Length: 286
Length: 136
Image 1 (tube, helix red, strand yellow):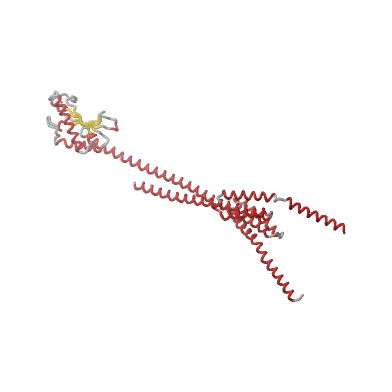
Image 2 (tube, chains in turn orange, green; image 1 turned 30 degrees about the vertical axis):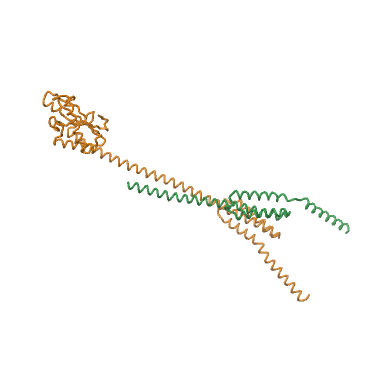
């Protein structure tokens, strides 16, 4: 053996050694990758719960790959088994992602329900509070109204109004008009003012004004006079702001005396204007 | 010695015959045929799971490997065909799961966003109602 041949052999041996070194890690790369992938997925807390089947498949495939490698089977076979192991691990990871997404979705959905429920409760509570406040306010208003109307009724009572089944009847004597006339005298003003004030406050009341005369003079004249006098009172009320629809004027002539026409005192009582104020709360009507 | 040689020769020719017979009579192994069917099923399932949208590269890899498995099959390279079919199936299974995970994540994000929106709207409405009722 000369030097040349020796060198040649040495080189060959080196080359073989290098090849072996280069091919060994190349063969293990797929296996290492599979091992790392399986390790990663095994570490996940949900792995055993939701991806047991996939993780097991990955482990089995990895064991196959390791067995093939130990048996020095061709790289194609080892790599194939390693690839299958890696893919099973990848699949397991996706399975875990699905479970995580579902859990998160369930959480969001139950949170949503809680929000809706909570909002409903708060809304109901708020509404109840509002309703209560409104009821209190209405009750207070009602009480104030009742009080005011009672006060006004008291004022009318002071004017000798009488409660009858027709309603509250206020009789204004013949002081309102001169004999045979239908123009209101200045002395009538305070009574008309108070009546108008009452009607403006008690907006639910309507009023009928009836003119009456004694039996002096003929019937037609008295009928006409009583009508004109009732109408004068009506006009006075309307001009003080009472809605005309709420005020009705009627001429009753001499037909409904409240005293005997034989005496001067009786005739004076019969010459009168009656204001009948309806009271809707007591069911009285005209 | 002669007898021995003779019998070895006989054995050898017998083995050769058996090998040839196997080669001629054997179509593809049954396991390969069922593997190819399984791979096709997995690819179809991946497509149904929306892998064309959520995991297109993986689905494509599965289809490419399935095609190569067919080529190997046609060349009667059963081992290579088996390996390619197995890999194609694992790619398809992975693609299907990936598409499903993609879908599940999107839907979870959507629900989460909806819940967040509902929360802010609810808060705003309640605040509005409150200030309105206080103003009254």
